[in-house]
Length: 195
Ligand code: AP5
Image (cartoon, rainbow, N blue to C red; front, side, top):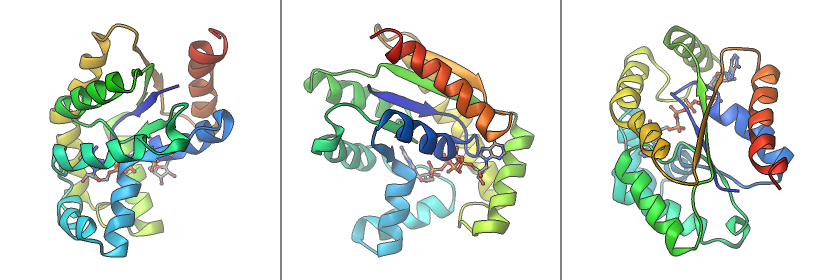
């Protein structure tokens, strides 16, 4: 079960990942969380990526691909993972596909969350007040949304043309539990009902 949870900043990927990983007993692999963790610890990798993240830009593809490759080789990832925040560019997607092919696997499902831009901005500004995340300010949010539209959205089209990979979008502009139930329906249809 190799699933990509896809969507713009603030669409609820991290929030929904908690429900999904609990229900299906899957490891949650969030590149944003992994990088924030490195930055908090002040590791060489963290120090390299912190200023890039604070500006809302993407860290280099080769760097993040190495991080993911080593994570996917860990034993708990052998039955699949929920990827959140990766791949974020078409080159990252192609690297992931090649990596999975070498492991005899592939991306089974891309589940994307649709939320209008004004709601995304509202959610991220609200989170800024609650949590003070360094990249949740209006200027950086706008950069993140622009980067998403320019570099990340084409990843959906990439997967629409990959045999064996389903792309399904759900309306993410609803209360958290409602979105969770929509996501559950899609995942059950793909993995549980098909088994
Ligand atoms: P990352 O951490 O992946 O950030 P993001 O994609 O901008 O996503 P967010 O965490 O902001 O939003 P989310 O969709 O997870 O929503 P959430 O559930 O948190 O990446 C951060 C940075 O790391 C990037 O900018 C980049 O620099 C770097 N990076 C990471 N991966 C990379 C990669 N592959 N390549 C290159 N660089 C990479 O929800 C947001 C808020 O909304 C929360 O407060 C939540 O409570 C609320 N909320 C959620 N759902 C609902 C709902 N249904 N109704 C109302 N409120 C809701």
